[in-house]
Image 1 (cartoon, rainbow, N blue to C red):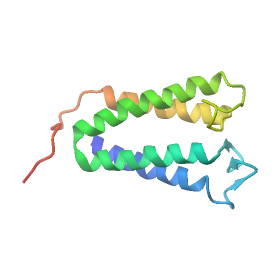
Image 2 (cartoon, rainbow, N blue to C red; image 1 turned 30 degrees about the horizontal axis):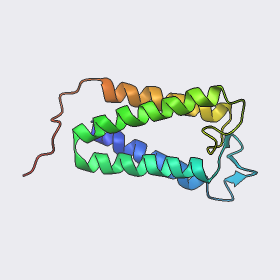
Image 3 (cartoon, one colour; image 1 turned 90 degrees about the horizontal axis):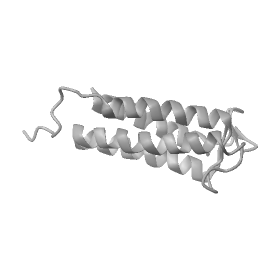
Image 4 (cartoon, rainbow, N blue to C red; image 1 turned 30 degrees about the vertical axis):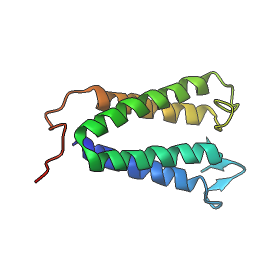
Length: 127
């Protein structure tokens, strides 16, 4: 179950990261006229998506670690975003209130998935 969630979130984050580079979806550095984006923000989403898919292909243990780590990273982005007053976060990532809310939702979801116990085997079946 957690590996399927990692795959789904990975695909969603890859789409989100790629969408930020598409001129038709992004105008005046605003994705869908809602989210502020720049290359650093898009690259982070692409990296998070690729890492999710890579972990999903590895093991449940890797997926749990992914959700915990990226839950903390998205949480840090959200907190910094709420206090940045629509300025860049960590001096490189575009931010506005919509971004901060999205990152907070990712953080809470990822931490919930990463911290809840599951009955899945933490290591992949070799045969």
